[in-house]
Amino acid sequence: MREIYLDNAATTKTEPEVVEIMNKVMLEDFGNPSSKHKKGVEAEKYVRNAAEIISGIMKTSAKEIVFTSGATESNNMAIFGTVQKRKRYGDHIITSAIEHASVREPFLELEKQGYRVTFVETDNNGVINMDALKAALDDKTILVSIMHVNNETGVIQPLEDIGSTVKSFNKDIIFHVDAVQSFGKLPVRPKKYQADLLSVSAHKFHGPKGAGFLYIKDGTGIEPFIYGGGQQNKMRSGTENTPGIAGLGKASEIAYSDETQMKIQHLSDIRTDFIKSLESIEGVRVNSTASDIFAPHVVSATFKGLRSEVLLHSLEEEGIYISSGSACSSNRPGLSFALSALGLNKTEVESTVRFSFSKYTTEDELKVCIEVLKEKVPFLRQFIRR
Ligand code: PMP
Image (cartoon, rainbow, N blue to C red):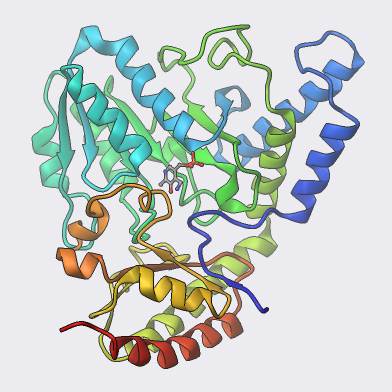
C-alpha cells in the first residue's frame, strides 16, 4: 500500500548516506576512539569530523560539542548538570509551560528536591511572554531553559530576545535551549542567542536514533552526568557511539546542504497551501497558521467533534501516518500544555492532530491527505455520540 508519512516531528526516515557511513563504521572502522593504534585513530576521526561539521553549521567550536544518546540525555545533562554545579549560587530555575517532557520532568524532579521552579506562561500563540520572563528572574536564578521550536505546535521562540533578557539581568545565569525541532530546519546559532547549552537529537533530521549532542559553551561549568572512563573531556564517559556519531555528522551535513535547505524553504509554501485546504474542511481549525512564528514542518489542527485517535487510525487505514498531539506525550496521560497554552479546552485538545513534514514530503502527498480527510471527516462525524 502507498504510505504517506506525516509524522516527521516524531522521527524521520534515515538518510541512505547516513546508513552507508554507519555501516562502514560498524563493519570496517569499528575501533574504539580511545585506542592508541590505527583502528582507534581512524574511529576517533569520525568523532572529530562530526563535531567539526556540527560546529561549522552552528558557528561554534568543535570542542564545545559533547555527543550523547539523544536529546533526552542532553536535556537531563544540561539541567541536572547546571544545578549540581551552581546550587550554591541559588535555588531558582525557570522554564516555559510548554516544554517537552525531557525538560519538564527534570524541572518537576528538582522542584521535589526543593528548588523553586517558575514555568513562564506564553501568549495565545504559545510564544514566551517576555514580561513574565523578566518578572520571574531573581538574584537566586541559576538556570533558564527554553525550547526553540515546540514539538506539538511548531511555534518558534524569540531566542535572541530571551537570551539578551536573561543575560542582561545576570550574565551568570545559564541559558539552555532545546533545539531538537529546529536543528536541520532553521538556522541554529547558540552564540546569537547567548545560549550556554543547546540540545539536539539526530533522528529528527534523518539521522539515527539514539544519537545526539549537547553544545556546551566553552568555559561553562556544568557537572558531568555520567562518570567513568573520562571520554569526551570527562563530560560524558562511555565509549563513544561511533556509528551513531558518524551518522549524526552526515545527517547534519546533508540537512544544511543547499539542496536540503531549498526543499525546507519549499515546505513553507506547501504548508501554506495545506493549511488553506484544511481550513476549507468544515469544522477544522488550524492552530499554527502564521508562517513567521511557526516552523515550516509542523501543522496542528483541531477537528471539531472528532477524537484525534479515531482520525489517526482512520487515516492509518489509508496508509497516512499522523500524530495525536506529540508522539512523546501520547504515552503520558494528561492534557497537552502546548495546546492548552493556545487556549484550547480539553475537548478541543482531544480533537487535535499534528501533521509534520520532512524534505521528502511532496505536494502530491498532501493533496492525497486532504482528499482522504474530505472523505473521512464527514463520515466519522456521523458516529459522534451526542
Ligand atoms: N525535545 C523535543 C522538543 C522533542 O521533540 C524531543 C523528541 N520528541 C525530545 C526533546 C527528545 O528527543 P529524544 O527522544 O531523541 O531523546
